[in-house]
Amino acid sequence: MGKTFLIKQYFEGKFTFETSGIIDGSKELQFYTFFNSLQKYGFEGNPPKNWLEAFDDLAQLIEKSTQKRKVIFLDEIPCFDIPKTNFVKALGYFWNSFAADRRDVLLIVCGSATSWIVGNIIDNHGGLHNRTTGNIYLQQFSLAETEKFLKFKHIQWPRKMIAEAYMVFGGIPYYLNLFDKQKTLAANIDNLYFSPSGELHREYRQLYNSLFRNPEPYMKIIEILAKSKSGLSRADIATATKLPQNGKLTKMLEDLEHSNLIRCFYGKSRGKVKKRDAYYQLIDLFTLFHLTFSQKAHNKTFWQDRQKTSVLNTWNGLAYERVCLWHIDQIRNALGLSRVAVEYYSWRSRTSVPNAQIDLIIERADKIVNICEIKFADGPYTITKEDDMAMRNRIESFRAESDTNCDPIPVWITTFGLKENPYSADVQYEVKMEDLFE
Image 1: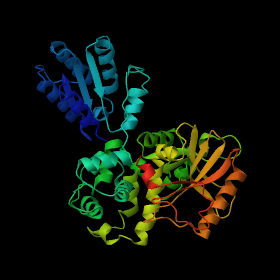
Image 2 (image 1 turned 120 degrees about the vertical axis):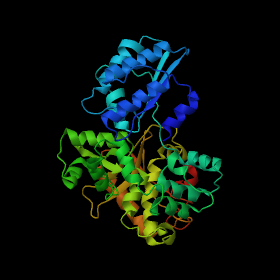
Image 3 (image 1 turned 180 degrees about the vertical axis):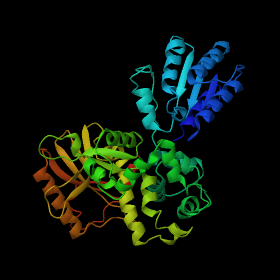
Image 4 (image 1 turned 30 degrees about the horizontal axis):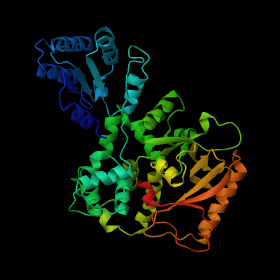
């Protein structure tokens, strides 16, 4: 996401102390890294034997600094927390016994493992409880920010192509920065991912290794969710993965949610909604792309060879739905709901045959429910008789089974709007791809 870049740019590299943990590094390697950084900034003592000594050495370094403001930057901090080394306790002791009462010390901690940061720093119940003075939670770029970034890189692509790039790589600055402006989008995708020497060819494994200390059970959950378009319940996940339904599974699902890889939602139904009624859906775009195509690709021009095929048409529809979920605020604005309180969720019928499911419902405080149908097309979309009947079936199923008193009204979210025909004449609300760029 560019966390380290943001911090280093803002402070222009003027730190009293800066160090970074090493992903998958041993205890000895983490201590060596920390001590080596201490030496770089002028510490002349002996190597620390434990984290209490390491932070005591850091306190000595700070005491000798002549800087008016002592900025301490610990990057990739989860890597330092090797089991049985008491890193978090030592950090808490350092802060409470030395730095907390000083007005001239600013401690910045940063890490890719969001769940570790949340559990050990923000929601800490020990020495670091309620000690943070500010949190910066970096999100991926929106479509509008992606467009600005690509223009900054002198990549002048039309918005549909930018949306297609987003559907593969999301709004991750690191991925977008790898694009070659001399190549088409399809050629970039092949070059970066499908080529055995591509910089993102092994990114999937590296991504999860950086996020979780033991990534295998998390990847097992992700790979099961990738097979379900509308999401799975906690019980479904436990059955499919053979993971026990206990607090450990709950923690893993929360970790994945904190990392913006999945989302949790509740389908509306009559009666009280309970935690066990929650559904989980994969929303990370690169992960979805990898798990859809990693086993199908057999050559380094895979993506270029499959343009305009049914395989990519199906993929485009699925991925565009996820892009819309990342741009709920823009959809709200397009519908004139920026000042109206809303709740949004997915829903599936428990009684209708065939099973009706709605990928996006926007329930509004003005007593209206928008039933959203999302379609990706190369031009204006033509609503067919089958589309019209499917929408009517969803609305009737939702009205019969949900506990809302709101009036269901359809919304069509497309790339270039709707083509006029008898079925489009009654459409009151539509959102175009252009609206997602606002």
